Amino acid sequence: IDQGTTGSTALLLDKEGKTLGRANREFPQHFPQPGWVEHDAEDIWASVESSVRDALRIAGLTGKDVEAIGITNQRETTVLWDRATGRPLARAIVWQDRRTEPRCRALREAGHSERVKATTGLVLDPYFSGTKAAYLLDQVEGARDRAARGEIAFGTVDSYLVFRLSGGAVHATDVTNASRTMLMSLATRAWDDDMLALLGVPRSVLPRIVPSAGDIARV
Image (cartoon, rainbow, N blue to C red):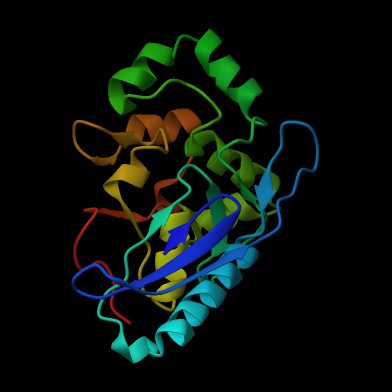
């Protein structure tokens, strides 16, 4: 599954790497004001379902014939969803979105740039997911209280797809996506308490960090 910024592509491959089926579905982009870019995560999920279904049809196969699924995805796009239903609580904030620049500027002016870079390897910029997650938690009514009760999940698109594909059983992200959130320590490859406190993201919403290849979830 190649989940991109403007659409999703499904490739069905045999063990020799030959393409048996391929399908693509685009989905809408939303630009509520200059510098803001949003996706509806339900549109993303629908595009993945549709492209996978069509790729299987083209190949003349069914889901039972699939032994494994791999995901590549748009990286820093940020989704906040209900753990019980899997439904997004607001539109996803896309990687290009610049709305959290004032927050990043304030952190830079407060002298946190070197601290963030030393821990995460990243510059303090709205491109990354951490300030987007904090923004959604602040803007969605009751989200922080619900997060404290363990009712809300945050993740980049890979994490959202794993959650939906597993029927809500697994909330995980791979280490490379986690490294783009501005919340993970490169030294430990784990969520960093200092970065969580600095950006205002509670640990309760975070996915488990897993290797990029391996048995992450079973259907």
